[in-house]
Amino acid sequence: MSTFIITFAILMGVTALMAVGYIIKRKTISGSCGGLGGIGIEKACDCPEPCDRRKKLMAKQEAEAQRSAKLEQMRIL
Image 1 (cartoon, rainbow, N blue to C red):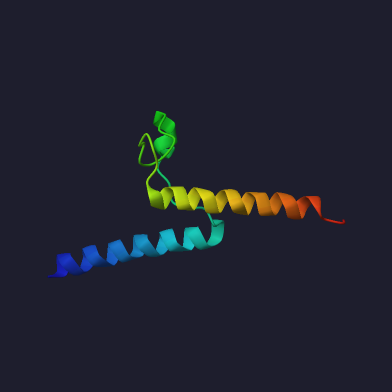
Image 2: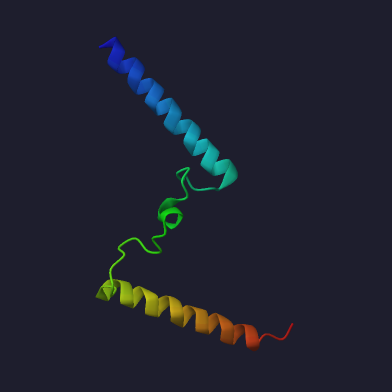
């Protein structure tokens, strides 16, 4: 039982240290290889055609980009 408690305490300590590191640096936890982009995969699913949910998200992002560009053009200062 003491082994379990010690292991759990160490695990909680490491988790707390990672949380403090995130709070201080505001940097997400990432792998050392650079993710999927490091091996040449540009998107997570790597499908020839995105699904409906992904298409909807891409359309929303494009609309937001156009809105931001329009607001930037109309900016006075």
